[in-house]
Image (cartoon, rainbow, N blue to C red; front, side, top):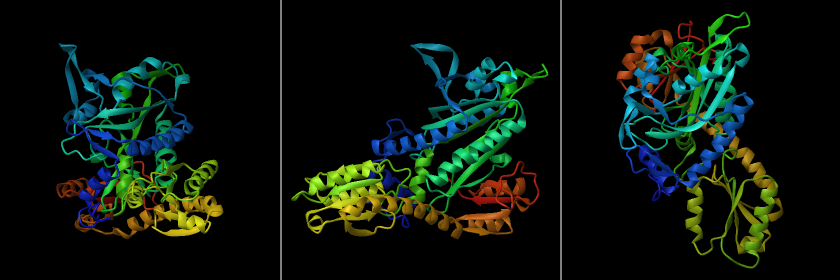
Length: 468
């Protein structure tokens, strides 16, 4: 397989690019910074969407859609917001062959346009909370693109909510953080994310608090997997989102926003991938079991079809590969690259003995077993390998995270992992010093691992790392 992929230990960025290309996940688009997501990659994104969307709806949010084009004046209503996004904006000045009366921005995020309509739709406290979500594309002009991680256009979901008071807004932002994002990332992606509070320096433009989920990648760097923001009343005041309270006073609403994107595909690759390719957690995998005809022979294809049907009837997402005109070795390498959790190989020799071979992607094991036992063995392997991927990622993170007492030690540790250091010894000045060395404070956490309300709380722990 070294002939197919650059080994991770030799050149991690090159391995990442090799895997995306060889597993046919995506390609570079015709405009610099854009990407084409190929069917194999998009199938994984669709599974991410389905799992996330179900959790978002359980949390009470409803899906809607808002325009791609946003009047430039909308962004200027919230000063921190426009300042934070100005370097990344794509601005349209001409349309229909004419110069536009007002330039329009290709949405980098939708707080402003959704705020405009929240103001229109909310009149009374009875209209709150208003809980919205949208699945869309956004554009943030990227100077150093990398497929899935940083592209000028990417796919995501963005939630936007309005509440009657700060406590309700905060509770909902945290509900999304834990019950939607963390539950999905841990339980489906198999990535042991750390949740925490972003520092003021790292906070979303226009937010009062930003909560984050950070995952460790295979090279020890951090990846921000998703964020949930309290926006206070900043956008409500900018867009006049007001409501009449039960006491008949007119009040500004409190709003939140939260998002996760195709960046999670990059996280999946870099957290679980190995030198043989992608390893997709079974709960996420579009194809959980891949039934392969090794070569044709008496009853081989028929037996493979029956196994496929039996697995499908057992609730397994299954595909059949009966392309015997393509060498089996090439097909097996392709299956490894794409990361199918289990393969069931059916060939004349094994079938003559009443067997098929179960191949598990996570550990590479190959086990002959009776055809009658294949379905139960596949179900057991899927459960075990979901846990194994999580356990392996957790063990890696713990082995590459150290406790230190000074900023200099934290910066040194960030060369190949994460550091836990008292926030009190870092502070705003220390954070700026770390940033100058390419190191960031990924999040702040309480000593017990819970998420703080403010960076001013005593005895907070800072997670320090290099990041994507």
